Image (cartoon, rainbow, N blue to C red; front, side, top):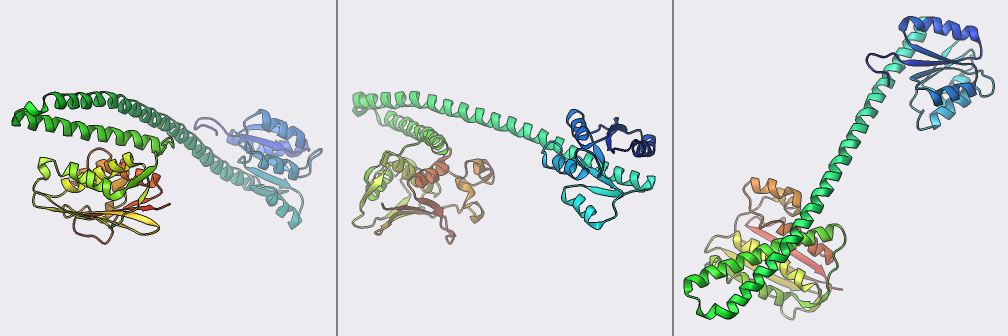
Length: 379
């Protein structure tokens, strides 16, 4: 593309020197850089070796005629956007149609007026300049996009590394707390027991957040393998509810369980599913005030099992029913004043359920509190 302070380069292709001199005479006052070729093969060589902004191409040429030269240039990705004006003494309409069929951008018939020639050249040069500017901007955007992708990948890898490194000391803290409880738990005074329980619970919550992040990374890069075993949804629900409703802050909150009779044992990664239930039940419990209520139902049939949890607390608007599971939307929704649980709990839940071949969604018809529905097909 010619710069703002440079002059476009025009290639004139004609086997008649007098014609070349005439065209050059018309163009020289515009201070264009002029190149010439006397046959089709020479024209292709010039274009290959030099940067050309527009070509004035005669049809009747030795070796390769203008149609063949134009067709080759327009089929080559590196030259297809060079504007070509076909110059012809032929009057037949079919020759003009043929010029357009091989990709010519315009044509002009001999004899021609200098004003007509200059007008068409300037018009196509302006279009070529717009195209080149657009190509340049596209290349800049591609480079910036590649840099952003590389930076994003680096951030993901760094986050993954940090999260993995956090897991080990948390396991050590939990192990020491358990040893402490086994050795001195019975002799702890009530106040010390209260603070010990708070530390233990906070450690469990932090470990759950870390494991959620690790599993999100694994699911997204396809490296997570579910450890499927026979599990019972009702048993997992009872375990999670017993654990979470044992927290002092949930003491005055009501929990209603409606667990389906004869719930079948199905293939689940029970460790992953227990964390899903912990996250969803913990979200529901935290979303209601003391005296509030959380209702849990489980149902099943021959093809699927379902877990339905309905908290009667702060309703998250329907416009967030999809984005609340998107890890990149968490900050935006929280800035609107809605609590989505700790870390990326809901994002993990959705990915983990989908890894089981199921779905997690919000009931669109519910307007009181929030109702989450987990649906897992039975195989």
